[in-house]
Amino acid sequence: MKRILLIEDDPEVARLVEAELKEAGFQVDWAKTGMEGLIRHREGKPDLVVLDLGLPDMSGFDFINR
Image (cartoon, rainbow, N blue to C red):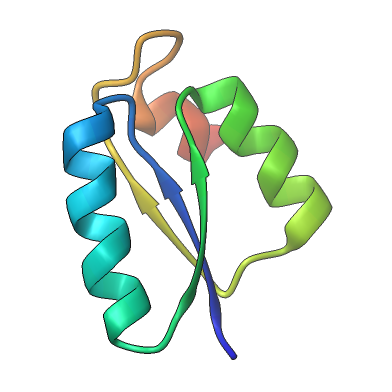
């Protein structure tokens, strides 16, 4: 099963996106901040990252650069 890391600080948006991805057959890990996303990315090596560009602790572009 393919794994997707969802990085989204809005819980309502995250729940909607997560539900759609799970329905499509993906395993979804959810991070609420960029730092949490970096940790989960290093630990889990997801197949794909779905990233909010406006996170509370860093921009999505900062996440990509790291």
